[in-house]
Length: 74
Image 1 (cartoon, rainbow, N blue to C red):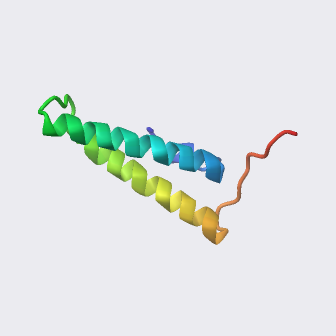
Image 2: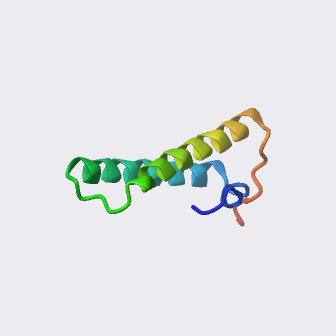
């Protein structure tokens, strides 16, 4: 995730999917850190911040500040 702009147009379900992926990545990075196999230790910090951003956008949706722009085309 390069920019915060990537999250603006996402629905709640898409945000939750990204959050699950971020948690999985964080867990893998922590395992690599514990076994001294991590190639980029700063990635842990980036993923933690990504998780915080995702929680912030989910909270905005919950409060009604953010509006879901993507709708199902049924």
